[in-house]
Image 1 (cartoon, rainbow, N blue to C red):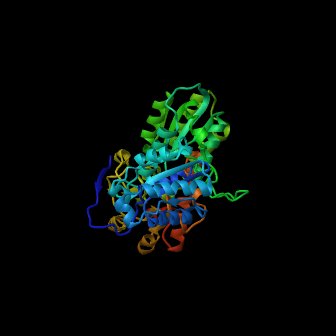
Image 2: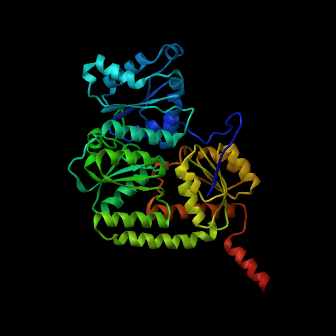
Image 3: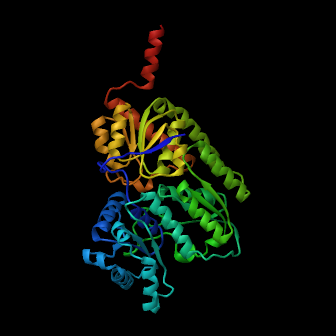
Length: 452
């Protein structure tokens, strides 16, 4: 059981955290033909836009209500109204998702009231899908914005009624730490059991790095509004990540479906639980290819633990990603000597370390140095820290702007866990070779020589 503490200092020095509105905007990008819009200044949107472009290496649809100083003081209804009208006229999205920002939250804009007034003034928009989420960037963090947005999607777009069920249909609510590559892997797993999954949101259709036949100013793919409205047909609601607990409960409560939450899907035991669950609800045995993948993972754990065992890890990530990656590496013999996250979350109490700090990368660097960490894992903003401390550095999370393929990184399933272990072990081997540090083989040879 970890003790969770919040670092008290005057300012963030080297940020680890990203804000709620950015998390909410990314969730809207998992809807088909959608346009996310941040209700705030142009600068708030510009920073988020640059972050996503650098991470995914793709064109990102993201608009703003462009609040000025005067509009902020007097109220933002006109900006919201003109923003919706202009977006609809120019891009014709199926849905517009609106996230608040710090400046409009401080002012206290009643955006839900704005939307009601807008529908009254513009009859053509009476039934047009508009989803507003309160995501103040001075509270919470990236995964909070994602989770609140998915829950608001459910509350706004899924009718509160029980309809005819499709026994093999499941609704899957992935957390923000689940990459487009992870979703593709999970879809294949579910379909191999004869199941028909709907993912909400579905980044694998919109941010998986494909080139469309024609240019579109909105999102390229994802789950459609009409499909979201049909989620009540699902027999099961499956959540991935503790952050999705409330959204799963909301969807199951509105539709009467059964529900199951998986707090992590990286590691041997969590995937044994997943595959056992899928076999149970589908009535099918686990396919032979996944039995073989499990065997490969066990062998990878055996091979990899020579390089990860005894390592002293410094880890910085959003709470669910921190818990997921930290747990599997602790099971591989790694000692977590420094752990820093972005926001409070109940799952942190289960984290396999003595302490988790809610802080920034400066806090992570200080503890990594004091406690002699010899492996660093965080997003790309940790690269200077890794250079200063001369540590092997594995990039995970968002943003990763100095490497390609971030959206295709897979850590779920037996295969994803196996590949993660290989990647980290190979990183350690390469670092040892570059710095002429002893490998496990030379350690054993030296011990044998001393015995002789």
